[in-house]
Image 1 (cartoon, rainbow, N blue to C red):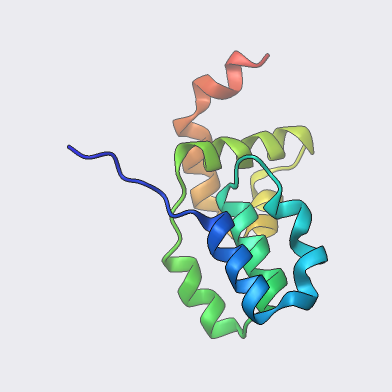
Image 2: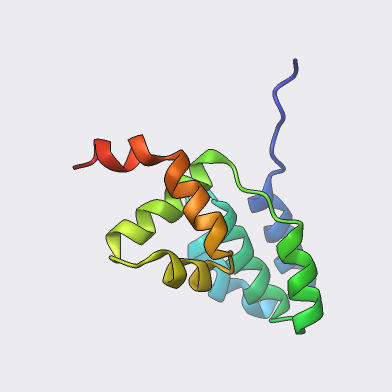
Length: 115
């Protein structure tokens, strides 16, 4: 079975900024310089470059998102660091409360290993 490779988002977004939005280069510089881009970072870059979208498009995009394990762990770390409940984190990242509950249950051993 082949390992699925992830697109080089840093290069994709750098090219988009250079070619179409050079005035937004400084705004996105800090995110593009990160060593690892998580799904949350990619969504933030997309929002900074293209702006916010209307509610129908947001809802459709929400259904099509997928997160890998490192993205989920990053979100759970954020929740723990900021002492937020599932509802607060779900609203912050545009997720459902059910998704947050599912992830917390899946990574129960991850949470308890830090204590």
